[in-house]
View 1 (cartoon, rainbow, N blue to C red):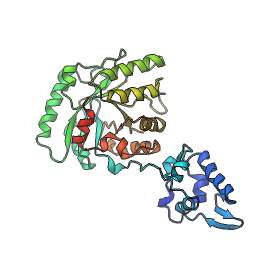
View 2: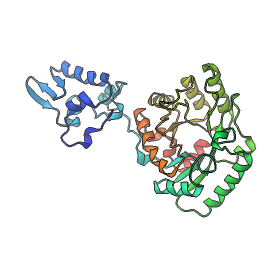
View 3: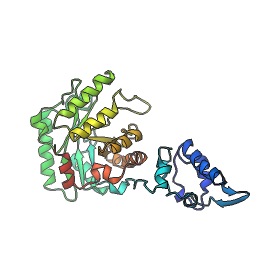
Length: 332
C-alpha cells in the first residue's frame, strides 16, 4: 500500500516510513543515511540522542538528508534515492495530462453504449478526442466486426464527427493478432482507420520464442500501431503469456510502434517494471481504459498510477499530445 501522506496534516514521516512507504529497501536506505550521520530513524521520527529533530512532515525528513521529496509511487528501492540526491527525479505524469482515450468499445461489439454516448462521456471527462476500437471478427465471443460492419462504423463516425462538437471521434479497431502473426482484417479496410490497436486474444500457451516471434511479425505490418494489454494478464484470473518483453519493446521502438498501459483494474498491463523499461529504451506508451461502458472512463486513474510507478512523465505517454501531434507519431 502506498499513501501520499502530504494530504494528511501533521503526518509523521517516521510513521509513514514504518507503515506506508514503498519497499523495505527504501526504508532501510533512509535509515542507513541516518546512521551515517549519527542519527536514529524510526516510526516516531529522526533523533539525535534523545531529541527528535525531524519527523513532523515528509518534506522535513527529505530536506534533512539533502534529498528532493520522493513521490510515494517511486519508493521501491529502484534508484529513487540516488535520483533524489542528484535532483533528477522524474516529473511524473498526471491525470490532467491525458488528452484522450485511444481504446474504447461500443455496443457494436461487446460494449454497452453507442458511439455518440461514448463520445459525449469522453467529452465530459475533458478529453479532446476518443477512439472507438471495437473488436475485429476473430473475437467472435465479443461480436467482433468483419470488414463490412467495420466499414459501416467508419462511415457512421465520419457522419457523427460532422455534427458533434467539442470532441473528435477517432476511427480505430482492436485487431486480433492471429497465431501466425497476421492481422485479422485486410489492409484495404484497416487503411481507412486513423490507427490500429492490435492484441492477442487466443493462443496464450505458445512457447516463449513462438509467442515473441508472433508479435514481432505482426509489428512488421505497417498498419500495426499500438500493442494492447501486451502480456495478456488478467489479475487473479489468468497469468501473462510467456514473451520476451525486452525484445518486444526493442522491436516496437525499431518499427515505430507503441505499447499500451491498459488501465482496467484486472489488467494494469504494462506493469510498472515494463513501463520503466519502455522509458529507458525510448519507446512511448499509450494510456487507455479499454472502456466497455460510459462509467469505465473513470478507470484512467489506475493507468496513471501504474505509469507513475514506472517513472513515466507526460512526454513518455503518447496521448498527452494533441490530435495533430498524435497523427504524426502514428504515421508509419
